[in-house]
Image 1: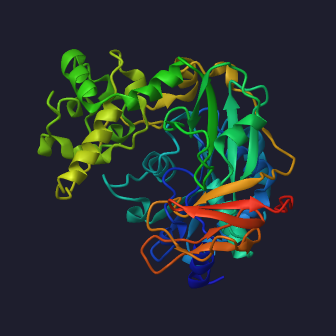
Image 2 (image 1 turned 90 degrees about the vertical axis):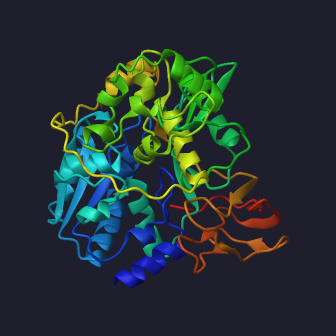
Length: 451
């Protein structure tokens, strides 16, 4: 398949980055790519989507990788996977005989190895400039589910489902192929939560966010739903996001002792990026005003949360950086050019946080059980599908209330706008409501017929 055809198929198939902000994948494909890296690091504890897909759909993943590599005329392709996943490593080592262009890059079990900047440094030995993307060093990074979706889209099957690990304080941890638009509460119920009072983290325990509304829908970027008892350490970690800016800044001014631990263990700082978290704590006054020049480096923060975990005073440099980013946008601060300062402390693992230490620190060890794949069809009575599930612009609605739709039918068409992709129905049924940028579809009773 030629590059232009692949881009069209990926855009029309609604493929976006399956984790994070969901950057439209078609915009990652183009000229000047020498290396394709499959990001199978899955560095967040407890999440197991990549492991399930690698184990059950290796040929589909490799088909997607081959399509991309040939279309962009890449010279090299790497499967970057943690060395501890012995079964997957051995399986792909055997499969690589049929794919001689594939190299396996073994990763250490550290956090956040899945960060694109950290991953490229480890796999390629090259550092992406501060504030830049992998393309600057001739690379494109795609995660496992994204490649799965690329292969499916090229075969004419758009993105209608999202793979989600449901784990934590549940009776049976699961990894489920979930219809997009199914509610969080319905998905979590399949795993049977055990605590009487609990919170749900969408995403990983480090970079995820507390779910405020259990009726919110699963989207293309939903990768994990973690049930944590109320007042659990993870609950406290994410609860800081709800503190007021004034409170966070006041705490920073009162108790930050400038021990520099947050800076010493910041992955981006270790790469040589001019991000200094302990100074970010001083970039705002108690009145919440902004010291523009000292705040600009906040845009380099990946919000991985390492600084929050290691702070001995229980402060949140991540939240301060998040607030500084918002303030910089509000005041329309001019974009800054940052210089790379190679850090001599970077070693083979980048002095990153060992995953097991993170697991112990956050009290997750009792949940490190295998999230078994859900083998049954999941057929909700209705779904509510957001038209915009990614970074960029929404597609143009192509259905009306009362329309009959089938699973896989386009309900919003990716338009000519920048970063716009199509959205498809995850079930067959009738459009019952369209409001607030969401399309609600009532099922006609058909079972999910996907692979």
